[in-house]
Image (tube, rainbow, N blue to C red; front, side, top):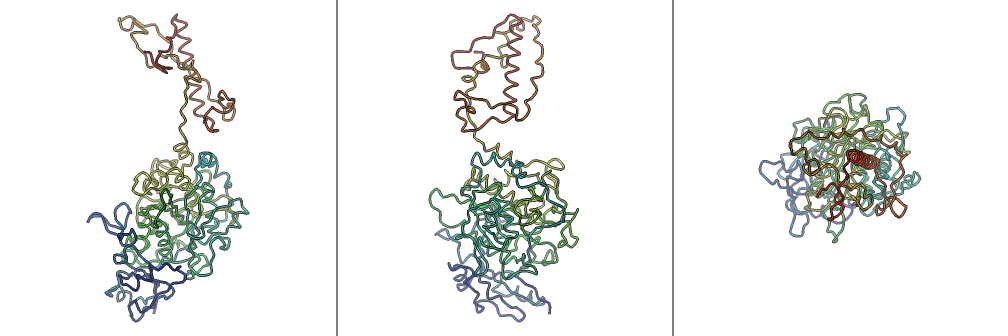
Length: 572
């Protein structure tokens, strides 16, 4: 008789809750089989202890509570902790196909769901890498971001993957900070930061491109003992456990002033519908927002986490073999969740890589959200950091850099995960057709645009530094005072049109503007003008001088500045 691995959602009972809420590490807890239904053909996994699924309540009767964290409230008790009696509890089992309905209809069972196999979204198509991580830094304006403190300082970055190897990262120039106490392993004996060099180490390297000073969490999901057919695969039931761990981090009491921004990278997913229950089945994952993992994603976003998922590698041009030829609607389940950023892939020439999955998504139609850079030489784990596996942590690092300037604050809409997603989409560099498209989303991540958004605005007293620029100009102008003949109906003396300004300076050829101290503009904290700023200043000076010359040729003298200050543009 064929069997299927499933997640079983159980209603509250005290024994389940005691184990789920125990402070013991997950590797030291187990299931008491006396607390679960006894049904022939159903074998429960004793090693998988009951796992909390926090209760959620829709804010209105017409809203699905599990779709977005903005639309539901969490079941919280008077102490601010998850309420055990309003929560449910997840266990794992193998079930004969003919017994699934018997299990689902048991009076202690809230639902039976597919425990889908999950694998990294890495692909090795054989083509050589294009560029290096240094090119990615340049394209994202990483040096400029770091100069103004956009470097991930104080931000938690969780790499949910096969594990991180700190020694390899250090040898490649990425000496990151790892919080071992808040990391997570699925099996006793595993130590955060010491995993075999592999996919998770690549993801950590790529996230550290933009956020080298972040605090990393090693969430070794894909090293689960309940793995799939390869060493780099796992199951969604363990992903639920890992996400509950992250929920506990976000909901723990905070010290006054403590920053708890969390960015979560997920470079993995489901590759084929055959791994799942059929669409329409109550236990389906790919299209079902009520699946336990899709709900825990919503819960974690509701608690303030920024969650990123790889779009996948089932693009129509050259799909991964695991896709089984299915390349339409191939962004499954949480990878296309409305509460996450879904990341497609482009190379350093801003060309979409052919394996990058295309929208629409299953849970949210307008997916992917944006693209990240991939298929470059970087971590040294593989010849190329490739797949949407690499694109996703590249963007996750940029999100962490943004969070250093806009940390999450509970109750503040401007700092909510939804606000950060909107910011990332609005600052992306558009690719393909104008606006959103199913190949690129809203475009490639705009590191340079984000730098310009957050760079300090330094007030400059141009009139004090360059007083000749602040002499009154004809725009704005008191027409009747300056040209009385216009107000008497007489033909005016023409002033020729302004000729084109001087040619823009060649990048790198314009010396820095210097202040009285002889360094870069005084009071700029070491910041030089951008080339565009210099060009605007040169154009302004050219036009101002041209008008003065024309007025002088006609026998008029510019009026002196008013006594009320430098009066730039004023004719009072």
